[in-house]
Length: 167
Image (tube, rainbow, N blue to C red; front, side, top):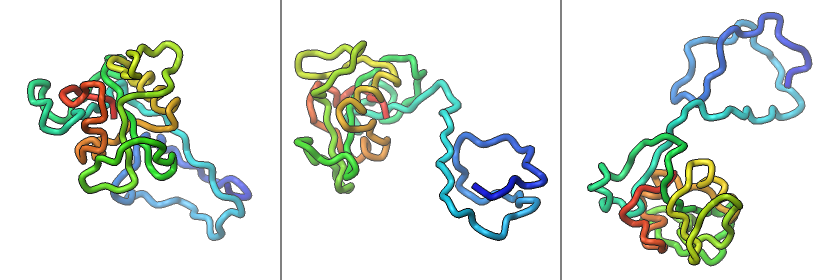
């Protein structure tokens, strides 16, 4: 944070997603010295009621419309989770074709309250919030679309290779 507020605060509304190119708008009165403390990361909630799904095994979801789909966050879909180096591998398999240090899994050891799973820990139907909670309870996160397309969670159980999963 700066030592004092600017004399002309911006009237522009904050954006909810990063842009891929610099803004054409400059700061009216830029500061010349950096602050002593790092700025807290901006926490912005996702401004959409939709979320992406990816096929459990790319090329196997043609009957569902292809490898990638978008649905309401309140819809129920299957859950596969990924870990990266920040989570540690644990006993999760390494399946990715080209990515390294990414591990995917379908059989969850920890099932949060309110989430339904079979005896093997397979979560076949959860909404987006439930999918995120399930992955977090297993020291993991939802896989990214790129990780799913790289087959990082392919063949990890639960018969989810031909269904869309939350990403």
